[in-house]
Image (cartoon, rainbow, N blue to C red; front, top):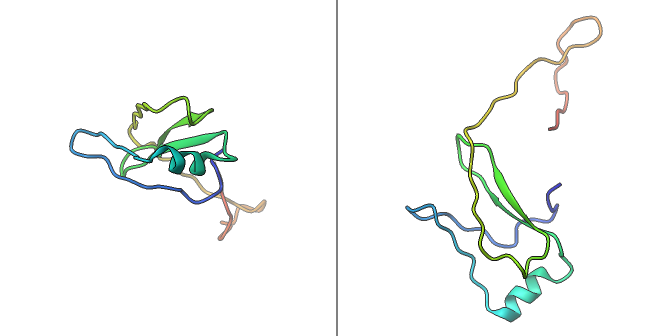
Length: 92
């Protein structure tokens, strides 16, 4: 799954959908040290997320992400007797 650490860098796309993270080599080496698996993740309101898993962050520096339309999963959680169960935690 995703890296549980908070994002190391955050940026937004420009009007052409382009983004860029810019580091000099020592900064880049410091950010990926001990993290052989990294993710670039894109999120936007109304769309499902997309990400690219960078197995070796030093090898892949061009990324194309496509955000599909958001799909909504909804339902109810009931107790065995059919009563609604408030406060249940759900995960995907």
